[in-house]
Amino acid sequence: MTIGEIKIMSTIERLKVMEELWDSLSHEEKECESPDWHGSVLKERKKKIEKGEGEFISLEKLKLRDRK
Image 1 (cartoon, rainbow, N blue to C red):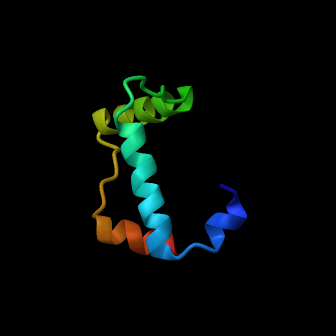
Image 2: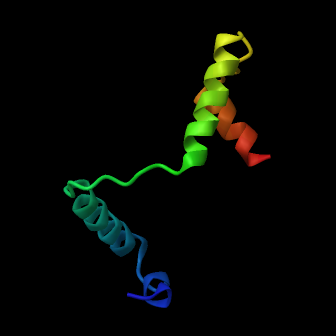
């Protein structure tokens, strides 16, 4: 399936394909490893939290911030 074929599909069709892909991936025993930078980001966030510098916001505020 090409990007062009995907773009002409309806939203419902694309969601169904996405669900089928997700279902097939979720049943695989082999796990994907996270990239190294994920661990670095998590360590930095943990340090901020331990220092009392962590920032916690509501999902609503995050959505508003992302729109700007």
